[in-house]
Length: 88
Length: 350
Figure (cartoon, chains in turn purple, green):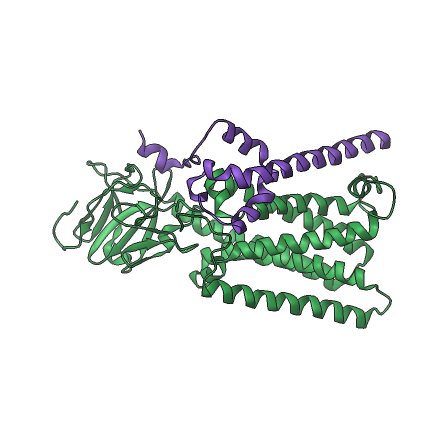
């Protein structure tokens, strides 16, 4: 039981480290070359903004990589009951 | 509101807020370490620092969690809400410093990966008395990291407000984990009545404030309103709405803010496009409805932010019959202009 738990713990930690490592590499590329094509409000933004979003990009890199590959140019518009009803 | 992201949008109020807060934080940390060293001379500086940072992070998290319901219960607390995200990010930074020092002191000096060591060095997960409480703090810290990393408006826009809000609601899971982290850890090694009493008081305060705010909002959401033949719903008498302010009602599955301003009445969705802030708790400033949370603005008659800003929210048809304010519950597309109802007693205006 203890051995099984150790394997699971190692798998979790090493998986997390690989995910974060890949995310960090992606984030370095994305904040300089990708963010402005995904969100028009990021065009012309400074170094401080790019550094601030870097940890989040490293955490959510699969979502951003998917949108970047799909050439999404503006964020999704949220939906709430009023917005949904107004479109009907 | 912005058309181009900035790292941090500081203004004078935010600077005063942050400087005051940082001074209080440094004072707390210094006092904690100083008093701790005086009362327990055998404690190492690292241990005192770990405890000071941990208690500061938990105390700050309690403050952050209380600000939301306090602001909903009493608008005088709204200025605290204005810059709450800086408190949240600081909570994470204090937490990560606490966790980092603890990880280094207790798990980094062996030949096992420190994080693996944290999870497996004490495998008694079935025991209450010896529960490996450090793992609870680690998972709470992961949640706090996700929240701090996504605190910039870029994330609000790119995750969308509802997803962003759901992600940030995970703070309650982190809070529960931290309460258990303290209960099972610090309280077991140091069963002090002051510590346990303080913890219970903090949890009771957070829970009771949230319950009070929820009950208050339930009253708005559960109020039954009957539609007239033309579909309009009577909201209230016009004198119930203060000038430049709104009354909030629940229509079409969401709250609607009905504003009275400059002899006119307009109705817009109560949900700010920025962080879903309660627009109806804001005021009309310079001809625009101003969100009480972060100052996002919308024209009351069109629900559109003034140029060059692009935010738009749904609008509603409104009329005043005699003294009664009536709103049609079918929302118009975001940004649709609706002629405001003019306030002329005894005459119907649509």
